[in-house]
Length: 375
Image (cartoon, rainbow, N blue to C red; front, side):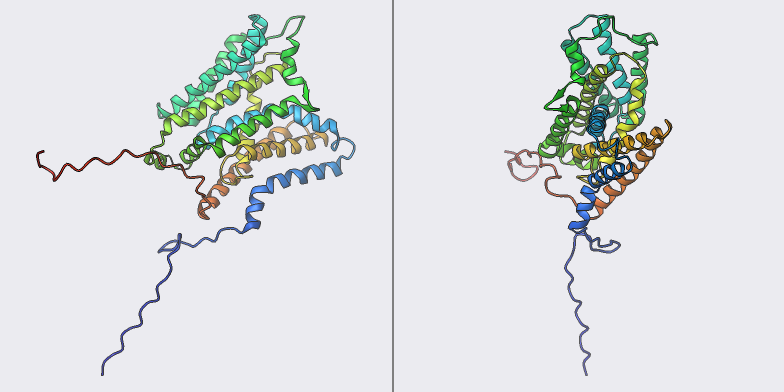
């Protein structure tokens, strides 16, 4: 009597996350993706509604909207500047110091040097690019952590600001600054404050570069996995320096706007913008494109912060609530950004557009025959 053969195991269809020691993760449905992408814009609308009901006479007015668009334009520009290095996995802590130096230099060239204001603005913006390149070179070629490197360069920029101003303030003469220069901040375009138009144009430009051009895909890959970027032939050091240079250019532009707004040179004023900039940039990575820094998400995050801060200010909150609000938001933004990034990786939510195009490979060498043979 022969024994029957054992039953053959039933073949299983392999999955992308199947295997020993791996847990199958089901991707979120359309509802979950919509909440993750557009939850922050919905929160902005909800906060606006709540404050409008709570403060019906002061909050839902055109004056409040104009005030938000005017006062939050420079924090929005600086948040976009902070976002660009974050895409590559680096942080630029010299933003606030660079902003202070840029606006002090504009005032020095206009008041002390008598330069034409267009030339002074161009020189300051070009100087911002130089500072950004310096940061990128120190981080990438000096192999210094971006926190330490940019904190050191920021301290040096603050020292230069103090040297230029002599520890005081730069005050324009009795004739003031050129009207065309101050109109860069004070004027409107089609009824919309001109600074808000700058912010929108800058966000659209960054969205186009990061989402539609190859350089944007390269920067995202560098931020996600520098080792993989090296293996596929992406020059990580060069593109990281590009990111810091773009950040410096935007900071220089923000310094020009700050000088047109303040109309006085104060070397320490830029430090007040550092915390809001990083809060907006990090919180923005949880919206529109959850798990990755993006320009439109940063814009939405700045809107949330602006509406919340304006509402609590009109409710009569004390002065210390402003740093408390920004500090708590920054902690929340870091936590949510980390969770969004882990969630995005665990669900495999990486599309073909996120992956870089493979660099051209050299043609294979012709076969000259067996090894060791002579022609």
